[in-house]
Amino acid sequence: FFPRAEQERLKREYHSIRQTNTETSREFMQRFLRLAGFLGAAAGTEEEQAKNFQWGLRMSTLNHLM
Image 1 (cartoon, rainbow, N blue to C red):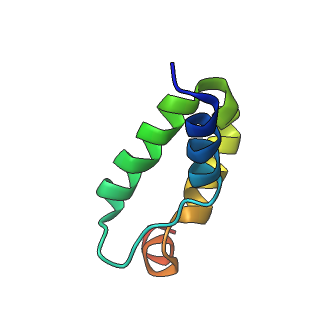
Image 2 (cartoon, rainbow, N blue to C red):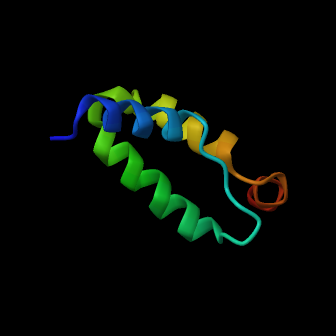
Image 3 (cartoon, one colour):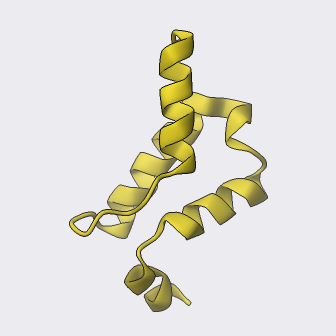
């Protein structure tokens, strides 16, 4: 259980998450999954989570994967 303020902070972080320039795609995925796990159902459906993950990747990483 997290206090409401902490839940809101995690939700904001999750919805604005971006891969940093020094972060590998694996590190980003771990951070993303940790946040999604904290949020549970508030993280959205699997499809919504996948879309949020994709939008958070650096363009260079995304281009490499596609």
